[in-house]
Image (cartoon, rainbow, N blue to C red; front, side, top):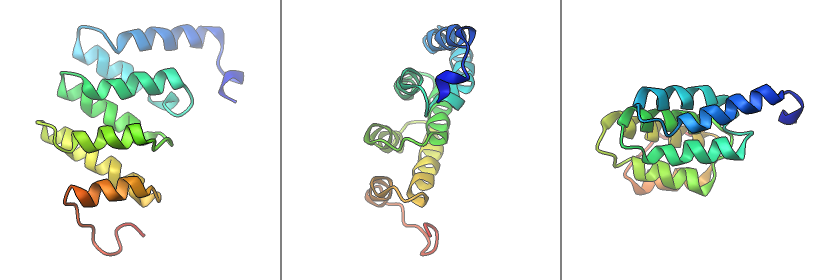
Length: 130
């Protein structure tokens, strides 16, 4: 598993990046999300940290967290619910990335994502999900 390839130094770095998710500067938070993205599927702490970042006050941080979550293999109810909420975000880029993530999940066969898209008024081309 992942533990076999991570050194103690890596764990320290991951811990520092998780702390950076709460930095006062939004660009530091964005860079922390980008650095942690490859681990979103493998680390519950990283997953939880990035998932909580969808509620950030800065739109650029919300966009980065949506993109990170879309890279993961966990299409959990929590993720889909967060993305559903973000479809109605005040920022159009957040809306766009949330929709793109849900479409990606739906194409991968996630029925909850498909339902959320349909409920929110998205009508795919007939072949779009197949």
